[in-house]
Length: 436
Image (cartoon, rainbow, N blue to C red; front, side, top):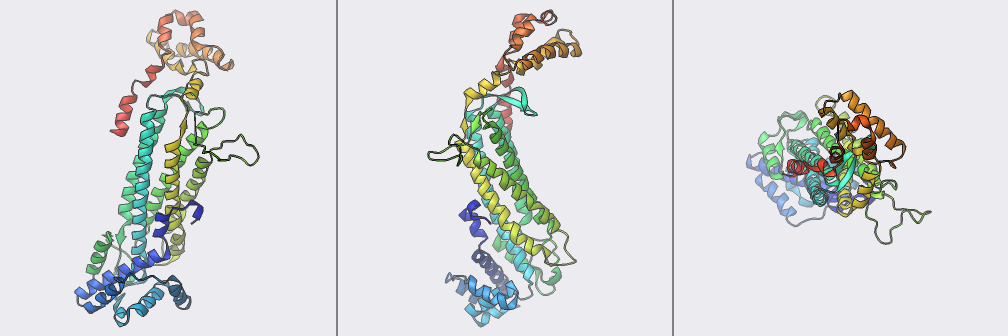
């Protein structure tokens, strides 16, 4: 975790003290149910919860000191708790194995991380929707292969992003449900030394579902899917960031990141206003995607359990969720304060002498009886003259002077094909599809 790219709420979920508090809750809830079943004295859980009610500080350095000797993190924690609670603590962890605690804790942390990320997505969706409505009919040029294609609106560009992040949210909801499972099944997952009722009790208390069948670990295909969902969100995030970066290029300058008073763009060139935030988002997206491969490789574990996945998850769990949380918040801020320049969009739209209306003329010619091949030839030979002039010649005027074109279409009919509003007649229906 890099503090520069971290926010407090998400970071707190991965702090050692937060982890140990979840460990305690798992152990105490399990002991509670074991007491109800008569496996351990009911006084054992009471002693644990009575100590917990004092809101004790988790002494992380003390636990670390014990682990330095035991070389086992769960045993170190249990030893420390026993030192605080006393004799009744010996009934903790009855019939359980370390993975029961570790895997269930990770499920809680990832589920809670997902909750924060879902809030982030809601904030981002709200910002995109507001700006899309603001620029619903702001004309701009649509580009294919980076080249002028046909007119769109800036609102449509943002509506597309909204639809994409709405899909991302649905995927994350599904990934959260899949990852939020509890396993308290004991060594190799047979429940030989602990009842499934204990697992069900702990799951209910922690807001998890029961893992239908675990070995000694929760199957890692669940985790692979979770991190893949985060990676798709990151890619969608980068897609929007790259669009903004392109729009901010000096030659385009149709939109740009907000540049605050006192901000500096370059140590050498005082005139610079760089798309620093969206470039940063591209880098963060690369990191988030990089966690998918190790998550996929974690799926193939030896037999009923090994720990080759453990060190991996100590990295990717906190890093992926903390980074994505920061990145989504940053993207929301970019969209919220994005500077949009409709006049520049219109100027760029008009820059190539009306070439963006070529398809309408092509279709109109075919409707008068001209073959598609001939219609394409007639429009293209005039369009290339405009292209070669860098837009200084008007396509409409050239077409009016082309006898083969005017034999099929009158001047007024040609002029009608250059009506910008024609391209926006379905904007309302598209917005209705996206926003409902």
